[in-house]
Length: 495
Image 1 (cartoon, rainbow, N blue to C red):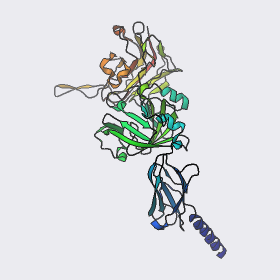
Image 2: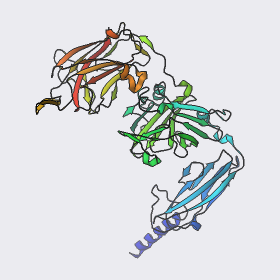
Image 3: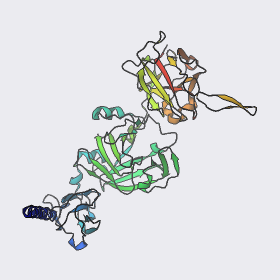
Image 4: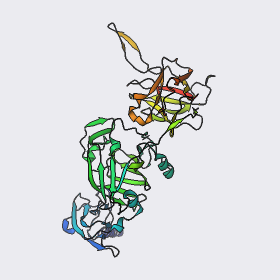
């Protein structure tokens, strides 16, 4: 027994000896045996690089007899939890470097030193990432970036990265670098927000960032308090708050897989997700894609930007293209808007002679006011002089909770607004959320239940319109009705 106790004592002393030399890293700064730390115990060295006076390596020399963890604030927007940390300071000026020691009993102590950089050293930021972002040190006007409002470059980003990129902004699972859950359609936010007025000008000289807005900021409801923003309006998970932009600084950390862009203050790149850090996972001198890690909600938010002068709607001319979708193989690029999660291609629930297809599309209408399925022609508008008939087969189940009218005290009231109908609309996608103002809509009402029905929507009455490039299909009517399921198949748009 004595030998066992002796061995255990020696092992414990070895652990404590190691703790006195090497800090234990931890995100919660609480490790091991409880003990306190005082300011006079915090020590570190600083060594200037032989290659540049503006590069300094810091090493923690704190000695303690119990486990501790450390955090460096290098004064240039970067932090580190390693025993040694290298700080780069391309611009002349003063920088405050702070080392904080955390111990297991919850106490912390810090030591700071002010570094004075006499001269600029632009070679430290003369990298492709900085040059693509700013245009280089000689570009005194900087480079102006905006959101890729019309999705001109989302396909380029998706093909280059192999990530699921659908629009200029969107979200997906944390760590996916994609927009599996939602991606914005071209110009989608123009009806409610001034988001497309945002301009982000990056200057390499001074590593400065100028953000111009329309006076409003937008972001996640769950994250607004993190940034200290005063919410003035809420729409689902989106919030609006006063934000006029301003002058900031930025830094790039190129040590990881992707360059990490860090903004100063409360700056953010158009839509606030609880962070001022972004990974640039795609970048050319004209296009870039950023990933924001929304740790509050466990989401990835992905944004696509282009140079201001490239943010133009590609001109579209009328073209007659036969569109078909039997949902048996390759499908059209349908986009869902506030539909239920069970929407998608499923087995045919009633394979009768009128429709023996193996697969059909299940449309789950949600209780949202608008619940739509849409297709937008990517490079042309519809030539309605020859292409003006939309045909499809639809199945309206009887088990949905449709509108019912009752007599109450001599008055007839409707207690539900779900309709046995389908509407098809032609719209101009460039109008974004205001597309309904110039749309043409055809509605087929009071459809029979529990059977496949062939329908035709004749748009020859507007054959002279040349600006329509979007088809919207809407089952069940508009309004906050009860949700319901509908099915359609053999979609075609042609002569």
